[in-house]
Image (cartoon, rainbow over all chains, first blue to last red; front, top):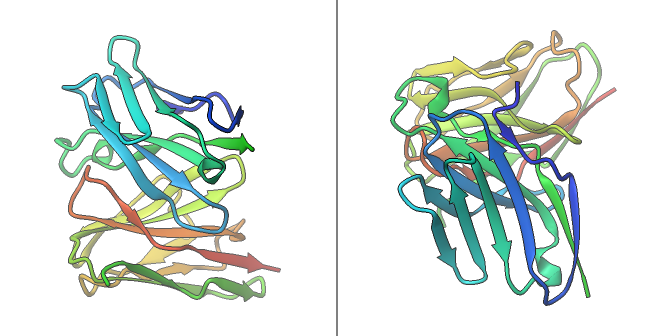
Length: 117
Length: 112
């Protein structure tokens, strides 16, 4: 059973516009969420994270929003650039679950973003 | 420069052969992880180690083995028992359980 879901396998956006990538989770014990960006044949790179005590975290063009009641988070990229074209993975964890599997990062299946010039 | 290295980038093996993938980190991280990525499957956890000389099975450990004799190294052996070994393998490390993980560049293994 998937605990972290990215329901859109792909997203196409025009350069300069906003990209919104969505992620849903089912486990209410998750309290730390991360977004990773991955180019083909490379390892994922950490992008931005958010703790459950916040509902928003911003870093330059990237903003992550967390809605705990809906178990939903989203990544906004504004403005989108062609170099943002990549697969974006959402991940969730419970850092206090020492020794338990919930302390690991649980990844969604990813959303492929294409930003067209 | 601190980071995670995986070698080789591409690896080819014949069916029935065991193969070991290398992962080294100089970030002084306690925890290390192995994932495989298949098209449309995201990242699936194979094994993880929170400390030297200790490791735990992940979600898809069957057909794989690991060792953690040194803090810097976490090699993964893909055995002949792994039914579908062809995949992109990613190693990661972190300061601890639940922290951000930093990934290596990956190894593409092709078994024919």
